[in-house]
Image (cartoon, rainbow, N blue to C red; front, side, top):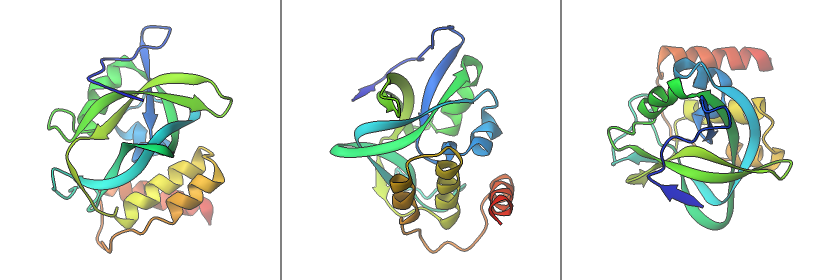
Length: 188
């Protein structure tokens, strides 16, 4: 269930909030580039939503050179992701990364279920106006690396791995290329 226009979601300590990531921020090293306070909280499932990739407002991502992840309501479907506990001081950097000010994404409130069945309310993001297009191979790789790193269900990992990327063969940002290389080195 999405609740548009939500404000800051505070956890019990009042200094942090919970964020449900389903795209490139699944990967620890990726989220830490702009949001160093993020601490793994749980793997979780968002029921009745579906993962998609698109260009916000029809514009190709200069960072990723292909579609970027979003979610939309879809009864019977599910999206798996990671819940990060983050310091409120990183809320503005997370919003900036997600392009809230430019209208790329809007923050939403979602209720997710942990693998233990606990329901928690988190901040997440949803693209507002987009054209569905496939992700670049690099973007897909970062998402799959994050899914594996955090132990998302194997069936869901297979689903992510089966996504057909676009045919972009160039480079993405140097910091992302470094993350991909480090991830590949760990698996060899």
